[in-house]
Image (cartoon, rainbow, N blue to C red; front, side, top):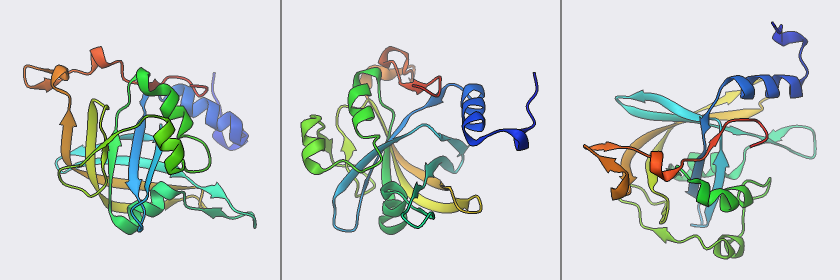
Length: 190
């Protein structure tokens, strides 16, 4: 079967592309605002751009404002203003917390506390990492590209400056996340 993309509705486009590009790892991103408040949000539009320099991409869809335009979400704003983040690779055990932090509004500190998330200092960036995530990529903001006209998303390039991986994931000096059961979006409903 073939689909001319120009004839598809927005929901048909979403379903088709997310059905075809699988699995997509979930990036669970912590960032801080100018006041130091932590924000956490999951993103399935995330991938490697290059290994040297070590760069990943993160696409953050915009939210619609009251005038029919769009506005950047907190993760995109925080990265642009404070310049760093930590990208966690959550396990299936984190699924309830990932889901809870994926609403349209940022979680409050009370909600973060209720999820039982503990934070550890990062080594190279100001944003803390989630302590019980077995993989954490500390990154610095590199570039932001506005996507679409009108703008519907911000494609953000992040340079990874430090990597944390739990010791039990290391075998022969390589990270093997298989026992960790990394969460991935394998279907648009996941």
